[in-house]
Amino acid sequence: MTRINRRDLALLALRTGTGAVLMAHGTQKLFGWFGGAGLEKTAAAMEQMGYRPGRPSAVAAGMGEAGGGALLILGLATPAAGAAAAGAMAGAVAVHAPAGFFAQGGGFEYPAFLGFTAAAIGLAGAGRYALDHATGHTFDQPWTLGLAFAGSALAAGVVVTRRARAAQAAADTADELRDEPGPVAEGR
Image (cartoon, rainbow, N blue to C red; front, top):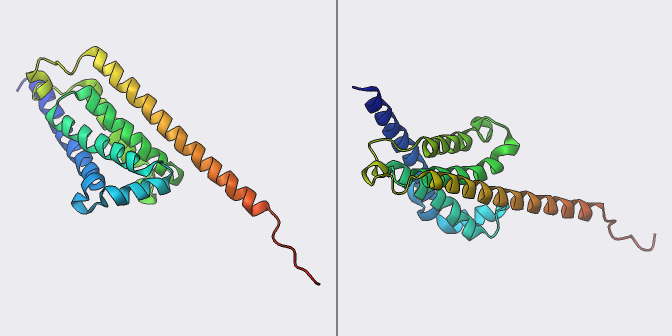
């Protein structure tokens, strides 16, 4: 086996494994498959996590994971697939970050790993055993790489920043309510 074939087989294995995990998580959110909550409950959970409005946030997260995962498996539009999945994982990292790094404590280790892996595949390309190769890299051009990752980074930055600002505003409001004096007792 030549070095190129080994690399291409490794990319196929990495794309398939990473894409399958992402697809499973995305379909949990969108359809309730694999023991997931489904779209309505995921939307309510997104609202609780500070991603508002919840339903569009749930759809975006689910599509980033399921759609990005499916495209990674196929090796089609690999830069966009990797960027979409990495962007979705950036939102998950923001939720888990307060719990620290390690997953056993609720930290961001797992979504960060999935995001970095998807991004690396998007940057490296799908390899020879992929639809991108079969289509002559129609959807895997240098400009699509830059556009996909810039767009994903911008979108993730906006979404995560909006969530952080909303959380800070809610905390400030809670502090103000706590600091207000209560009713004064009469007749004592």
